Image (tube, rainbow over all chains, first blue to last red; front, side, top):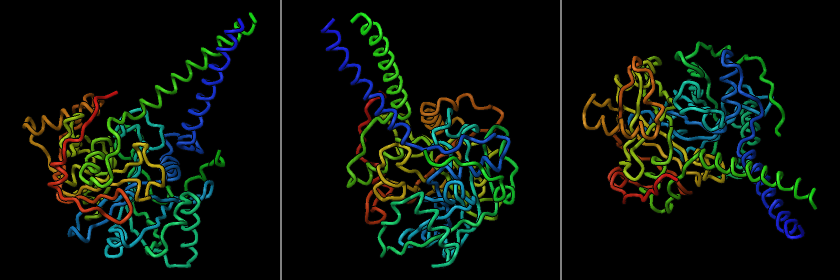
Amino acid sequence: MELQVLVLRPIFFFFFFVFLTILQQSSSARVLTITKPDRHDYAASARWLVSQNSWGVLSTLSVDHKGAPFGNVVSFSDGLPEKGNGIPYFYLTTLDPTARNALKDQRASLAISESPLGTCTRDPMNPTCSKLTLTGKLLILEGGSEEAEVAKKALFTKHPEMMDWPKDHDFRFFKLEIIDIFLINWYGGAKPITVDEYLHAKSIKLASFL
Amino acid sequence: MELQVLVLRPIFFFFFFVFLTILQQSSSARVLTITKPDRHDYAASARWLVSQNSWGVLSTLSVDHKGAPFGNVVSFSDGLPEKGNGIPYFYLTTLDPTARNALKDQRASLAISESPLGTCTRDPMNPTCSKLTLTGKLLILEGGSEEAEVAKKALFTKHPEMMDWPKDHDFRFFKLEIIDIFLINWYGGAKPITVDEYLHAKSIKLASFL
């Protein structure tokens, strides 16, 4: 009995510790602040994808490749939790092709997936794993303007690392002015959703960060 | 003592079971078959990203939006483990804009990130979190051709769900014929890497699936 207690107790505590560590790691991997909206609410579904994702692929028309479509992995933010406005803001350097392309031709699109959120149970291309493409104009925001401040706050709170990015790399704030929305969040093809419905979606209740 | 054994033992087994379950779930979320290559080996780094990722954003020139760049979340595969050839294959339906766009104008790019692989420790846009854009031509593969069979095998083994996708949705096999490679896998901007180096990279040793 003495032996069992001596042996079992440390083993028990070891596994309990490991269990807690794993639990902590798996929960810190992604902090989902709200649950997935009802799939019939297209505007809320689209806003949820934008609000929850931290990166996507921003496509522009390549200057280097004579107008070919050039997708680039970028971080973005549409605002602070509970205050996101649905407009994706970016912090891009003109050392990178995407910003240079946009300064030549503003046409662009941002594609994001539900896959990184960890809520998909099927293949990333299965229609039940939501995907969203926002097509519009990638516009540079005037330094010091009110909107540049909104973008800065949105980006630096979601991507605090950006505050330390090199000052001499000509990083500038951009926004995607949305013209068209392509949303798949269930079977049956792209869902009907207007930019107005998207931008004025009922404020999706975002719980404060856990 | 009796009581301790009676109480401790079930608790111990409970946590042991939970521990095993979590461990299994976290490892099944992503099966990394090889570790990240040396960052100085650009070709191996690019091939690793293609081999390990299961989805990316495929950009084409939109027919519906007068040539605007249209990024779309898609699943892809470059081949069986240990036999990947670096060429991304896709299973696209003409019900979706991407395939229709490509049939009008073949210019396309595939953008993928290291972020979904779980090996990034910094922001998805930090240069240490690798990203890759393959620019080229999105070509439809002739039904029944040798290359269509290669694509089919590559896709259906990595995305078994595809085998059950609706037969009446006109899914077809496509490949990206790579013309240019844009790789960021460390500080200092895009890395010099040719298509030839990429396609003929030393066979990256892929351990069999865990």
